[in-house]
Amino acid sequence: ERLYASYFGGDAELGLPADDEAKDFWLRYLPAARVLPFDKKDNFWEMGPVGPCGPCSELHYDRIGGRDAASLVNADDPDVIEIWNLVFMQFYRDESGKLSELPNQHIDTGMGLERVTSILQSKRSNYDTDIFAPLLDALHKLVGGAPYKGRLGAEDADLRDTAYRVIVDHARTLTTAVADGAVPSSEGRGYVLRRILRRAVRYGRQMLNAPPGFFCNLVPVVVTSLGPAYPELAGSLARVQQVLRDEEESFDRMVERGMQYFAELKTEMQGSGVQVVPGDRAFLLYDSHGFPIDLTQQMAEEAGLSVDLP
Image (cartoon, rainbow, N blue to C red; front, side):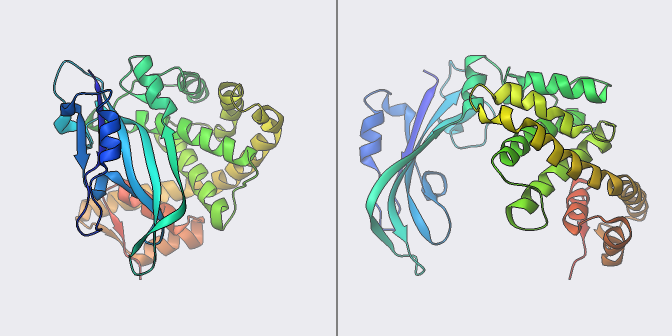
């Protein structure tokens, strides 16, 4: 009685009827009160303004149960979560917005391993499951201080638990990506990885008082955790750890000075009621301290500020 299914309810602007085929399928297994139609915002998948697209159907789970949670489906409620998505790749949208049937249609499906694990283990958060526990324990041993407590929002005012979550999540991302052949760099996908690593390192240094070089030491724990499903990780461990160590050391040389300068700047601005970091101060961070502008923007946003950019 905790499962709810959603389906595409149709859209006059797109000229598409409701997806009754998906609806009728779910009605074989669920009562009508838990088979719910939604508009294109929630139940029509598209990869961009142009390209393959189609209606989707989702399975949602109510962590609490014993109630009618239909109104909480697709409402960003933390206790009513999507666990399975089926995209019916049926159409192609061209530059004019016109939809045409794809000659070869298929179903793109995905179920969230971490979310399903949290349900099976009766945990409210993915980070409370045994998927993340070894990484959180290893990080605590590296940084010391208070262990992970699972705090969110106002309860996590010092962002300590947020930092724990960011770091272990990014450790998994970077380990698997580098093992697959990607490397941090200044362009393309490599720059995405560089930003991910810098964010993790900054959170560790700033929120957890982590020692220099802490992040790459999480790689063996990731490999132990994911290795049974991805055996190729074990053969890449030394290479991945060295790539991330080199990148981390390079960033460490600039991050200490930059964070100190930004902390002083933030205090100065808050004291004067200014909400926008002047462009020349942001440039000084980049020119003198090596801080990329996107990192300054990220830190400003976290502090409730913005950056004056041309």
